[in-house]
Image 1 (cartoon, rainbow, N blue to C red):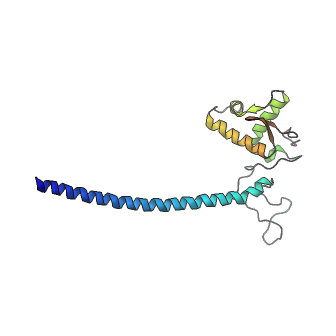
Image 2 (image 1 turned 60 degrees about the vertical axis):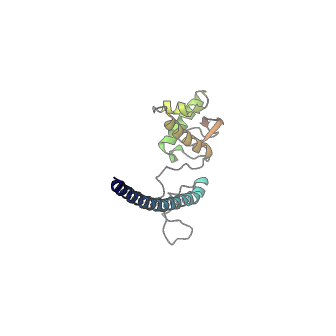
Image 3 (image 1 turned 135 degrees about the horizontal axis):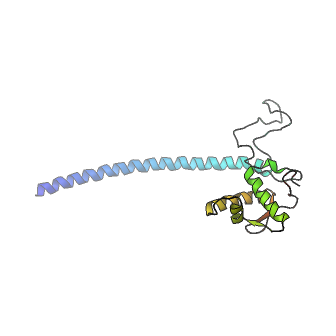
Length: 180
């Protein structure tokens, strides 16, 4: 009987040793993965910092000077890059005469709904009302996506937020054609 217990104890010890080795291996892999994740997070942050000035000034980082094609070797002209962002995916700063067509369809729909409500004297629109008007499910994920877009339009001067969570076109942003 004692011999059987010693045999089982020896088997248990070898199993514990094998599991500890596997745990150490997994811990080492986890440490490498965490370092890689931190490097990606830093890289993402840096890319955000590099792209932020172009967004804040209203410049579209996709397009270079539209009057002449961008070429390498010409001073003052940046090479055109189509890999940075999809056309109309960024919201430029609003300025007098800027047409709604510079915005993606989603942003145009938000502006149109706000303009329609303002024209009818119905006041600012909420994100829940936007979701219902656009025929989407009025669920938190959809509402928050619309809130994010509306807040971006506020930050860029296209919309005003007279009360928290209520949006209306900013003064001067009235019609889709000319932006004024």
